[in-house]
Image 1 (cartoon, rainbow, N blue to C red):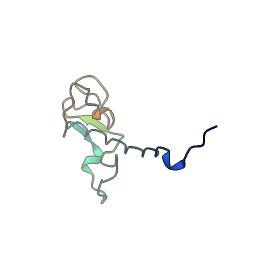
Image 2 (cartoon, helix red, strand yellow; image 1 turned 90 degrees about the horizontal axis):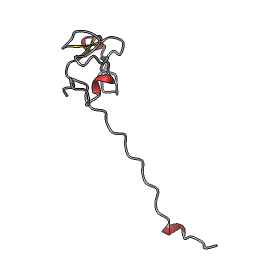
Image 3 (tube, rainbow, N blue to C red; image 1 turned 90 degrees about the vertical axis):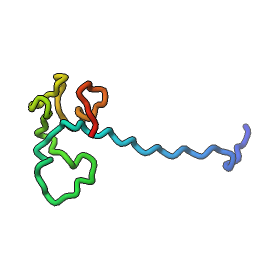
Length: 85
């Protein structure tokens, strides 16, 4: 059985940082956007209140494509109504 020199072993690859999700659609609105609570909003997902979102095109909880409106749903660049910030 051959012995392997530990210095000749390939170094493990460093994990790639997670890709940042796309910006939400410019037409997404939430009650949380209009409330200042003293936080900077720098954290992931802290900039919107998840319970009450609506689309400015329809003024409802579904978009012009009849898809649901939400923080994650309105980051989908494949939706035909999506417009980045």
